[in-house]
Structures are given as C-alpha cells and as structure tokens.
Length: 307
Image 1 (cartoon, one colour):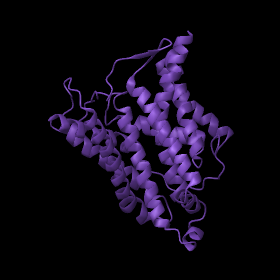
Image 2 (cartoon, rainbow, N blue to C red):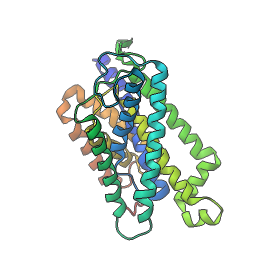
Image 3 (cartoon, rainbow, N blue to C red):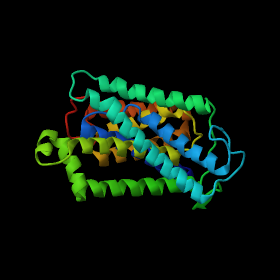
Image 4 (cartoon, helix red, strand yellow):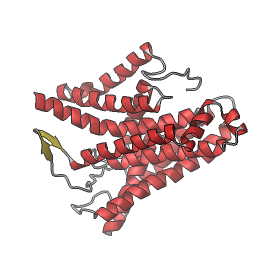
C-alpha cells in the first residue's frame, strides 16, 4: 500500500509540474497585461507537435507522419526539437499579442477573449490539416525503461519533466524577485501608467509576457508528449487543468500557481488509485470549493476585475 501511495505521489508530481508550467503561463500574462490567453491549451499541443515534426525530420520521416515506427531520435535531435518547440511557440505568442490582444487593449468589452480563443481554433485547425485526429506515441530522449527506487517505478521522461520544470520555475522566481527585468514586469503589472513614466517599456514588457507564457506552453507540451499520448484533442484537458491550477493557487501569485499545479497533479494521481472516472469530478470540485472559500485562490491577494 505504501509503495502504491509513493508511486501515485511521484507520478502526480511529474504531471503536476507540467500543469504548474501552464498555470505559470496564465499567471504571467494576467499579472502583466490583465488579460489571459484562453488558447494556452492549444499552445501546449502545438508546441508538442512542432517538436515532434522536428524529430520526424531528423529521422528522415515526413513531418506530417503520425508514427515513429520504433525509431529512436538521437539526443541532438531531441535537443533541437525542444528548442524549436520553445522558440516556435514564443514567436506564435508574439503574433497572438500583436494580432489578437493589443488591438483590443483598453477597449470596453472582452473582445480579446474571443480573439485568443479564435487563435487557438486556428492553431488546432492547422494541426488537424497536417496530422489529422490520430494520436502519436512519442519516444522520450532516455528511452522507456522503468527506473525503480524503493519499489517505485519511474519513467525517465517523468523524472526529466519534474527536474526541468522545477528548474525553470525556480529560475523564473529568481528573475522576478531579484533582477531588474523582473522588477520592471512587476511594476507594469501594478501600475502600467506609472511604470511608463519611469522609463519602463510597457509594451515591450507585455509582449515579453506573452512570448514567455507561450514558450512555457511549448516546453510543457514537449515534456508531456512522451508521458501521455500526444493528440491535438489533449489541448482542452491540459488547458483546463492548467487554468484550474492557476485559479486554485491564485492567478496573480506565480508561486501559488506552481503550488496549484503540483496539488492538482497529486490529487489526480491519488484519485486514479481509487477510480479514474472520478478524477475530473474531484479536480473541479476542488476548484469550486476553493473559489467558494477563497475567491482569489489560496494565495491570491488581488481582486480580479477581469475574467
């Protein structure tokens, strides 16, 4: 029994670290621009497919293929695919801000909500035209042999996801709290007008927020792909869980969002021990309870005036 609980804890932390990255992306755009990218889930799957396309190309397989046929990409190809997923999604995030968010900034209404949702539909439609509805089993860079520690089985990709995601989140926390660019982003989030008067490039900070959050979505998608079967339809599930993690932890608190991601991953994994069909019920019941008790999330402090 203890081994099963430890197994569920580890698996939950691994998947939860990917949810935390997605939640962090939501938090970055909200804290800096007071808007959200509701296509974040589609960005996760798009980033994963960009990486997979690079892996196919490295193996000489058509980029629109949906199977590796047992081929194992080299480490250099995996690294190149990771860079392509992160940079590619960062560039798409820049496009989203320029074309889908900035034109509606400061205007009454919530046109940016439909704009970001529409951007996600466009991404999914492009992906569907290239890869179709089939799921793809993606090989991890370190193979699929299970590592056993004290009876707990760990996939190398789960360990990699947990380590990389934790390192990225710690680095982000350091940048936000200890560097000038982090202080500038916080100043823009608090009072953009005053930040502009102090010489801070407010537009540049907002563009950077969308680029960074989109890059995080690409990273989380690439890390998740070998753990779950990659599909364009996974965007709704991972996007909702990432957003739920941000709501539970507190949308305006990056550390809270990270906590929310890990908490949802662990909860999901423990519920799986009992009955997988109740997994989604438990997660969204938790979200409702948290909102009822703490409307701004467990670690949120601001009153949200949008969304």
